[in-house]
Length: 285
Ligand SMILES: NC(=O)c1ccc[n+]([C@@H]2O[C@H](COP(=O)([O-])OP(=O)(O)OC[C@H]3O[C@@H](n4cnc5c(N)ncnc54)[C@H](OP(=O)(O)O)[C@@H]3O)[C@@H](O)[C@H]2O)c1
Image (cartoon, rainbow, N blue to C red; front, side):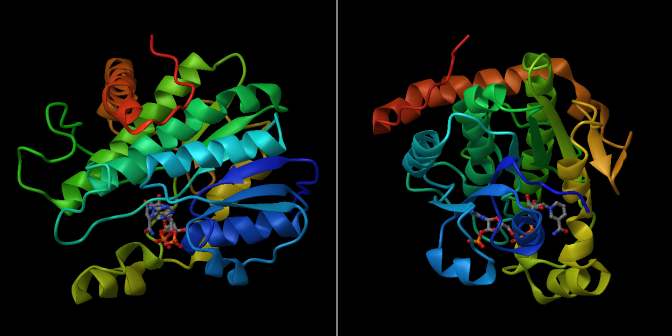
């Protein structure tokens, strides 16, 4: 285990599953942690010390994301690591955010996009900065470009989750290229892990995860490896079991799709989020 003293690390999804293991590891190893959480009561599971800055933020709410970015900027102008780990899988009926966005798309795709955009200046100021995105082996298929939020087609939680994990791989590719001279951007698949991800699923899926899933401690090891060995990490790469993996789909490596996705997210942001008076410094190009 390596010391993380002096590293300034921003982590989403650090209150459960893999992220909770990563959060407590960062604290144990002396890192400074900007810990996103939506429920303050969850701090009881975390060994909080004066190096931990709780950032209260529901990632389904864009105003919360803006406030979180501003709070971080009020504490520091440098970050070394951003870990976009929070994620969800909607089982059952489609769920919309208060702003009318399909929940999986908002939390798994729009939130990491806004955090990368909102925090990239701080990461550029940091030391050998890295963005670590939690993806999944479940990312086959294509983005439903005409209807990513299932407004015209009937909702499938499976397809929404799979599409969102393809999107996080495409965001990794896009930002690895855009930021190639300043920040590394990598993704990882933790394996099947017994966490709260399937908590609202039917008994069979829950049974599958609990029987075949590894422990959150084991599942978190690739993120921890990337965090501790960021100097050796290769930007734009997909990591599984702590190693570079060549198993992501050809579509997840398509630069055209990566650029198209970022254009779509930027234009959605420009068209709708500005109406709700959210002001995150997104460069529309
Ligand atoms: N488990 C697996 O087999 C598996 C496989 C591949 C990839 N993954 C990915 O691994 C990542 C971590 O998931 P996990 O398995 O550790 O699941 P988990 O135990 O359910 O943890 C998910 C984390 O995301 C946070 N989160 C969810 N919705 C949020 C919101 N609206 N605002 C703020 N935070 C929110 C949760 O916060 P709360 O504590 O407040 O709920 C929690 O900290 C996800 O990106 C997931 O897609 C998991």
